[in-house]
Image 1 (cartoon, rainbow, N blue to C red):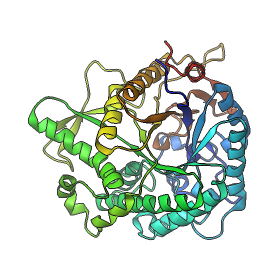
Image 2: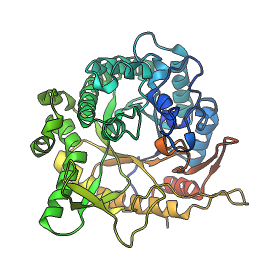
Image 3: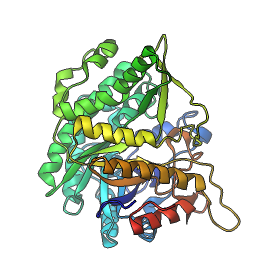
Length: 443
């Protein structure tokens, strides 16, 4: 099975998860620095203070990407490295770092995909209300303007936000991500303001970057009813509305789905729902992050009156996520059919397993290779079905700080020894290099 000519094989990372150097060269504090330094918030008290030290090792990391043969690299800008207080005078040293990183990538023919926001909001802005403050639309616009004017002569591919649903609900309702708040009304305001900021940022990118290709990345869940009972079918549809349609309808149709509004109306006080029309700025592509499916059955309580059911006889990653590649195929086909994006990218897909560095100095991660092979096959079938899928970014390039789980989960196709910062390409990474070289799925 051969992929289309020019298909972009890549890998992805996020700034706070790999860069480290959180107090160097004028970088400001971000909400994840504050959160991870708060006792009990992150497993083992881990922080991103050093992480993979990519800030200092970026040149050798780009050499490693070139060895693997990546055609594209998706990375995020650390907002507080560029604007330490979120607004105001830029930190030129911080901008210089991303200048150099982009130049290194282009020198080895790796296409940079920049994500403007991957969760590291400046703490100075959180102290002013963060994403819950309507002024954040203007703040994000100022930040987008600064970065795009600096890098837009060389970077043409831009993603405004990564997984705004996670930012809103894990960070502001469940409290397990930064900033650690636990209020559902706040979560909906946070999500609403992110969508407005996305729409504003698209306009700024089009103004500042010639030949821009601009989009947003949404984490989509694949929900299936646990049984054929009508109540379980309806529960799965409610979960889909809560997680998927709320964002997809906003971004592509300029409104929120009426059925979901009715379910969650009590938490929408104070939100001008009509204003979300601003989020429907025309996109050049949609990025989809996909990892697993959720089996759902009806419940007597909860926002969606639904609860997950663990599938029997299934394979799972160490995150406890079912390995279910068919969900990727179904989501790609569905999004193409119902929303007709100009182009699609899988902006994240990958798996955490209990990787072990063996005495031969290698990491034999057959489970990850099999996971990727199955999901590449799902992507190839989607292309055959007419889906305009243009590229695929494996999560992640390297093992890194996995948010509230600290360093307990390894997603990388490159192993990182955090004590020495040694990088070792895993067997899955070697296999991926050959997939890229031949542009086809290998046994």
